[in-house]
Length: 420
Image 1 (cartoon, rainbow, N blue to C red):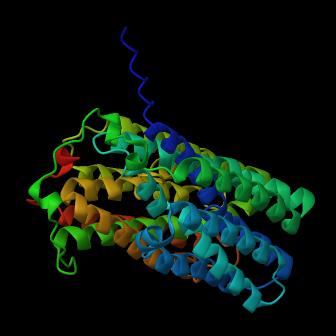
Image 2: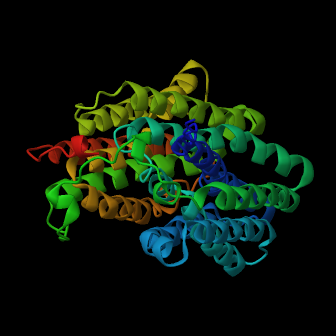
């Protein structure tokens, strides 16, 4: 009598995608979409200048850029679960500091904590968690995981406004922060501690490991400082996100005088609904052989049109505002998810593991200055439509520059996608 073979363990990679999706919901909902609301709430509570509070948002993102560049090293030294739990704890403490700050130095200290914490739940973290489990199906897997970022905006943009208005800033941060810490802590213990090797599985759930190329077996580490592909990709990502973050950081407070707090929160959520659609469309419909730089250029182009429509709607609202939010929102998610996929197509596996954290760190270091830079255009206050139009025009111009950078990087380089 022959004994039945043990059933194969189901591929764990999709559990990782689901867990990373939830991680991104909290990471972006609190660490990315939270600061624009915090800016408005802090100014309303303290009466501090918009430019100064915008500078705290800049510190939040800028300090995080320094941390994200070192995420791979931290993962190797102390492990993914510990880094993730530490990050969510710092983010929870940081947002509480935003609500409690009574002096500017306290606000900037809180920004350091929230900025260091959220990057352990941000773009580089999502890519690092998904990459070991997927190669050929990585665009779809990343698209699904990154959709958590957009859903975070859909949920948290109006949720922050409603909770702060009803129960206050401090109770709101305690409630959301507490749920976030518990949820992410459980995900770290139950899911993120596993690797394909620890479970005896292969990327994409393949039965046999794919053969490694000589380059993968003996990678040659080189500098990217003069690499046109790397430089244009990093610059394109940074410029695109600079325009996006700068506009989003001020969009809520610009919309409040026009449509009210409730509708402004819904509008921010509507933009992220569009982001989910845009990222899903690219993740599932983009052919494996597509020039991903051109796809990114098209995505930024749609955002340029959205920014210009905001100019038509400044101070009024109506159909142009709705169309502007929809078109601008379509590209929000792709600005984060497409650059790692471009790197996957243009660099070897070993290089990609180095390139992705670097471009994310460079991008975040650049766009960290966006809230403060765009804040300088708003000396006249939220109701000044002339300054609002200047802000939207500035965003469109920077997005066009991002398209130019990505286009300049197109050229002859062997595609590495088939090795994944």
